[in-house]
Length: 131
Length: 131
DNA sequence: ATGTGTGCAAAATCTTTGCAGGTTG
DNA sequence: CAACCTGCAAAGATTTTGCACACAT
Image (cartoon, rainbow over all chains, first blue to last red; front, side, top):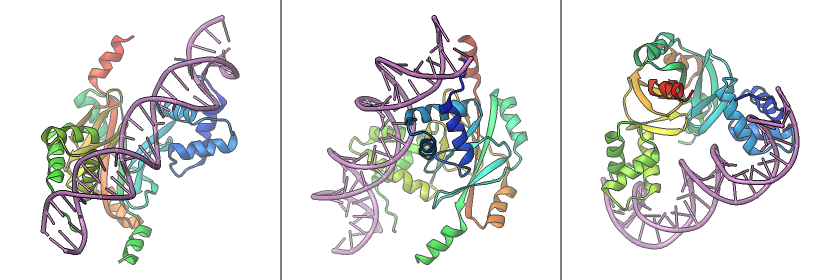
């Protein structure tokens, strides 16, 4: 159960922090590889899980798959359903509701994730042009 | 672009509505197969996408993959990070924030998804017992 | 020392797609 | 009949895992 500090784990954490555009697992892998040719995909996946588990990073599920993000309680995500881009936005306050999950249903350690999904301005233009 | 009403599409829609425990694509497939042996996985996946696109059903992304749900604007989801169960809960009001996404960033057709994640009572007991 | 973590590659999942033929409106 | 849609199976994409060795504590 002890958590060790390996170079690879640090590289994965750094990669997620450096890439602040919500990278996919594979993008993290590629970034890590820039620093060290020998790190394997398996290691990156394993460490992403460990880091999410420990709360050092956050996993964001959107259409198109799983993305990772540096920890930050106070933002939500705004994703474009056309191009898949993910944008940080201020989080709405759902603290009351969150507490209610713990109180009313007895869940522990409840975390909140708010995702807004729509069509970004660029993609609106694009689909207009296509018409 | 015309939308046709095929037996298979109806079966998929019915399956999602019948299974009200937020089925995975594969669970929908299995359910459909109970009614008709010959429907293929490809067809189920294709129709799930079509139905999400048209708003007849909703896709819920949680740890562990994509789930589907009958349309229902006024609920959020409470998922257990241990067993993966998904529960419907009343949605917190984030309408102001949602509108702000459209106003401030120019996104169109913005939809909201709120997901709470924690450990359900049953899983809390389990991990206590394991100690 | 000891048990975590790693690299590698294979395996397991899960989802998409090409194609030939069937169906809907 | 002209789109659409389907079944099948193969291909793609993504993630997990077994194993032997390496390394942090």
